[in-house]
Length: 88
Image (cartoon, rainbow, N blue to C red; front, side):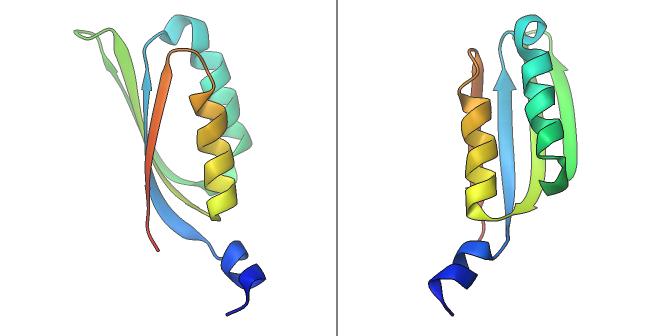
């Protein structure tokens, strides 16, 4: 397998997103998720009112570069934490 074909191979990933300042940042988070909607296979979002956070879980299918770009943009938003697990 060539280096280019490895780079273009898609992966399945689970992405966890914690938003601690939903009122201020929800629009930014949703805009990024909309821009990467072609990667998203499934999405679940839950408000966790006792903790004052919102939790979003995603199942995505994309290249490492695309998944990394999306999670990187989300992680740059103040009050947003992102973790992903990517299969190989």
